[in-house]
Amino acid sequence: MPHPANPNILILGGTTEANALARALVARGLNATYSYAGRVETPRPQPLPTRIGGFGGVEGLSAYIRDKAVTHVIDATHPFAAQMSRNAVAACAQTGTALAALVRPPWQARAGDRWQHVADIAGAVGALAGPAKRVFLAVGRLHLDEFAAQPQHRYLLRLVDEPQHIPLPDADVVVARGPFSLEDDIALMTQHEIQLVVSKNAGGSGARAKIDAARELGLPALMIDRPVLPAREECATPDQVLDWLAHSGVNLGV
Ligand code: 3Y8
Ligand code: NAP
Image 1 (tube, protein in one colour):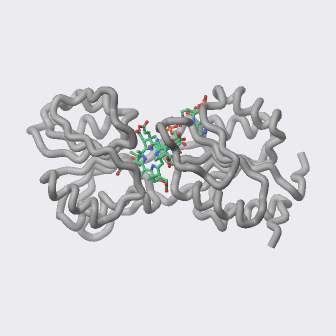
Image 2 (tube, helix red, strand yellow; image 1 turned 135 degrees about the vertical axis):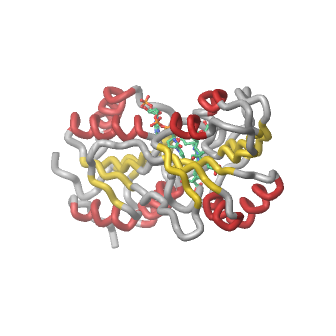
Image 3 (cartoon, helix red, strand yellow; image 1 turned 90 degrees about the horizontal axis):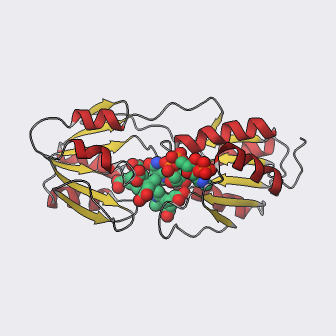
């Protein structure tokens, strides 16, 4: 399908970089829609028309692309949003729609970092076997149940919304959404006498404060590596996405 000079772009969002891309598209007057899964109660408002909720699997996304005559899909979801990314690859192949992913490079350990890499959430749970510690479990809400296998620890949980149920017997909860600051995370981790940080390798700037705070405080971290995703065009910055759009025939209006 030829790409019209005036595109109809779908951003699969939910990250700091997706929000920067949304602003860049608005600045160029490009026609785009921002998409949230609807995971949290009050997602950050966007300067674009916004849809909230799943599409209904690959078929649902393909139908959405056809119904809305989407010309380009930008998968700017979090690196751990693996199902959405897989569905985007399949639906764009099915419908012959241009797809690029906006992917932040993974964090790399630096001098002073004391990281133990684990392959996935289950690996982090397994690595928590052993005597009770004070653990900053900053991986959100969706996988908390899996950590119930290690109830011996005193957990500090940071969640976007007030939780309905906490599957851990000894947990403090902080309700906060990022981006977070180094100063605040050092203060939080000192106040709670944290001995170990558990983190996804999210990349980007919005979640890395706790990792830098761990280094400053000389604390170890369990670093959860990213899920493997199917091959697709990848951009590391919003500007690279704009270049990709320009190369696919979009007039960037500047
Ligand atoms: C709904 C939409 C911005 C973008 C904010 C980024 C940065 C701050 C850091 C910690 C780690 C965590 C979590 C986190 C971060 C940014 C970015 C990022 C981690 C919002 C948002 C939505 C979500 C969903 C939420 C998950 C959860 C994960 C909290 C908006 C605020 C832990 C990931 O309660 C729930 O169901 C929460 C679910 C998926 C992971 C989980 O398993 O619980 N993100 N986060 C999106 C949707 O509906 O489509 O309101 O902005 C977005 C952001 N969260 O600049 O404003 O870009 O990564 N999000 C992780 O990295 O481990 C917090 O506490 O240190
Ligand atoms: P996921 O497990 O990969 O996706 C599960 C299902 O949620 C998808 O199949 C899709 O439902 C729906 N979905 C996911 N992202 C969507 C989006 N942007 N727009 C519309 N539907 C979406 O996803 P997740 O890990 O739960 O992440 C959900 C959202 O939170 C994403 O926007 C992601 O960027 C954001 N986020 C996630 C994390 C994380 O740690 N996972 C961290 C920060 C932000 P259908 O199959 O019905 O289409």
